[in-house]
Length: 54
Image (cartoon, rainbow, N blue to C red; front, side, top):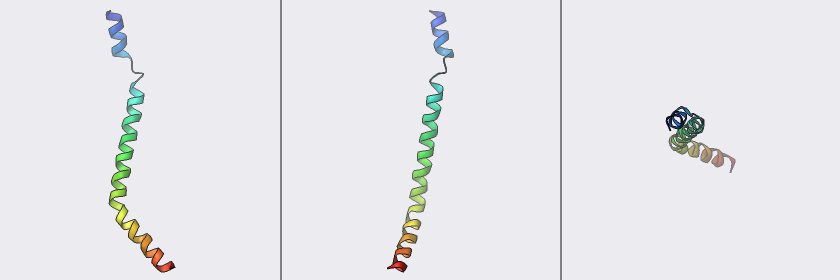
């Protein structure tokens, strides 16, 4: 029983998947925050470009 519990404690096979999940969530949070901050400025820029074209 002790050997089984030590093998479970020392097993790191799921750690990589957890790290990838954390990295993906951090990247998505940064993307959403960037879109929230830059969205109005980009929209205004596109509206200006469209106004000049039409």
